[in-house]
Figure 1 (tube, rainbow, N blue to C red):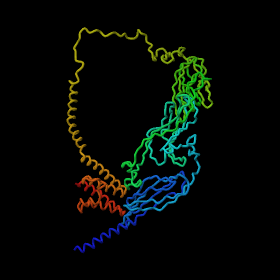
Figure 2 (cartoon, rainbow, N blue to C red; figure 1 turned 135 degrees about the vertical axis):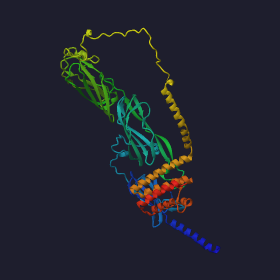
Figure 3 (spheres, one colour; figure 1 turned 120 degrees about the vertical axis):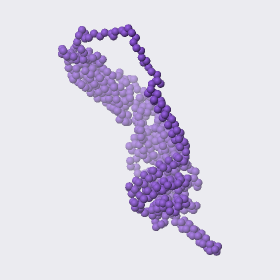
Figure 4 (cartoon, helix red, strand yellow; figure 1 turned 45 degrees about the horizontal axis):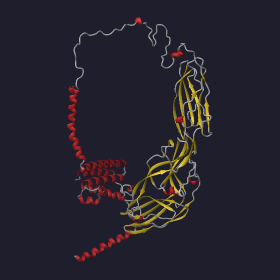
Length: 621
């Protein structure tokens, strides 16, 4: 008997060695770079594919003059004629540091302790085509007024900022548009934690875009992701003042704790989906700021300053209208004045009348419409009441401002608006028509209009109520609340509800601290979701989704009953713990076979599988 077993044992060992050798011989490593020709300001895609393995540990691609950024991996498996084949693809973003011909060195890949290499890959990097870009890397139309040249410290940092006002010479209180740009090195994961803010108390931020415009730029051979804001600011102090902008950000930095210098510990741990969960990245707070920019802030000149100047700085236009123009003396007239242009609208006051004789003037109310970039419109409405009959026009209005472009004061004066006043029926109308005094009009005799015309003698005389000589019967005016019947009933109902709710609350707290109860509740919710997903897949005839929900439902329930993680439940566990004729085991096997072989099951079979799965999972203990 022993002599017969020895050849059989040797045959099994040789078969295993031959199978392992054949499996190892099927592993192939290929590398591909697309496109093979690209310009310096563009990026290419490098794909490293390992065929015949489910996991691998590749090294980082290397090439002088090229920078590689890992973008993630993808897996693929197929079943053909009963044979399973699988492959893994590792994706990299390629950025060039200079132009020329480059060769990506063979990449070494370790699979189950054995090393494999890919073939070298050739590529060509072309010069940047200067179409639509200005020198220094500032794209046309971005609003920047100067070429950006980062210094050595900024190049080494993760990011930097630049603020570019329209002018470096401004007046105190003047609103100046500016462009703000933040540069972050491409490939870095950056999250903004605050909006940009001005440093110090010398400037006020008047407006800023809520969302920046994002684009790609290249400076000195380095690719950056730029964020651009448009806004306005004003100075509050005269002299040579430093302007600086800063912003808080958070950078996600990949840890370098992998052995052999490779960023891939295993196919699962290096998946980007699990990177943050498993600690492959660390977060670091940084503050990005712009270099100090010296601004010259001037005070407004006192020479030739108009008498009615209220602090408006900018460029404005004035439009005036009034309604109604054919009323009576004492009737209000609404004057509408609109100032449009660019400037500090927050300090703009209403234009003033050039002549107030014969008019009762009320304060004006204004509303501002912001058009962005320091431009806007401010509309004032003012009520005027004519008090004299001989007024022929609404008097002109006057508005003064300082124009920083020509550096002088400007006064705008409107034209008088013709007015046609009708004579008042009551000579005292001009006095009675003023606000606060009621308008009294003559009415025909015998009619009553607003005020009674009856004489005092015709009205009944009112007398005081007679005094009571006796006190009368006294009754309690206030009862204590606790003596009222409705209050007593309310307290009794409240106590009854408390006695009923207290045991229920204690039982719920006891269940909330029971891990098995919580696990069972969670599993039941997941099963309900999977059952609903199976029904939806049946309706849409999506067999792949049906198989996934059914397999997941079996793993959830079996994992709960057997004390295993759902993803750890396999066909081997079902075969070990269930009987050979168990319907649940047959369902799992059938799902696995149809999935690998690409078999399309009939609709009736899928409905039977759904019903069998629900029944068997409910009975599983």
